[in-house]
Amino acid sequence: MQLSDAMPSSARTTALVLVALTLSVPGARARAAEPEPLEQIARTARDAAASATGRPVAELEVAPIDPRLRRPACTAALAGRPIAGARAVAQLTIEVSCASPSWRQFVAVHVHADEPVAVAARPLSRLAVVTADDLLFVTRDVGSLPGGYFRHPEDVIGRIAQRTIGAGEVLAADVVRQPPLVHHGQAVTLVAQSGGLNVRAPGIAQADAGLAERVRVRNTVTSRMVEGVVRSAQTVEVLLE
Image (cartoon, rainbow, N blue to C red):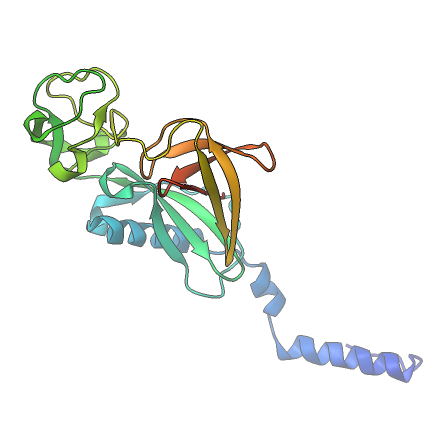
């Protein structure tokens, strides 16, 4: 790069400094424009699913990520965590996040394995409370159970049948639900996290929901309806896309 002798001395000095900075950081602008590799996002999601479920990665399949997705390259290691009851379902949702620059991406991970799951030992009526005598465990391909399943008696005993259940039917999470922690019309606290920022707002639950279940809540400050996950009897976490 050549600078004209006709330029004022101050302008020449500024230009030389800019040139020196550019040359001292080769490719910096190009690296900043590079997206985070989709393979790395998928690998982080798979590893988080394996850690959460105790399964070998060979049993886990990451759903295709939209090739048009362009998240900024992360300057630190990516983090992954399961959301909303990920330990006993055939499909997990993993939140992959970057601290700098701050972003989050939700990735689906499918489980493929044959193992014993809870089924109804006898017919159950709607609103019946599941007991140990109501359970049998039979081997099924969990990848064919999109509604979820249970592997341990303690995970299903005490749940409530949402409809009539036939003998031998798999007791999926949407068929036998937990007793509600949050009730329709109840005041709750909405919590949303983005990077290091934690935002809270008052809300009113629009339905009954148990622990780790999704529920719609009306934000009483903005009057907007949002969906979140029950974290306690008073708290609903809003999952930001």
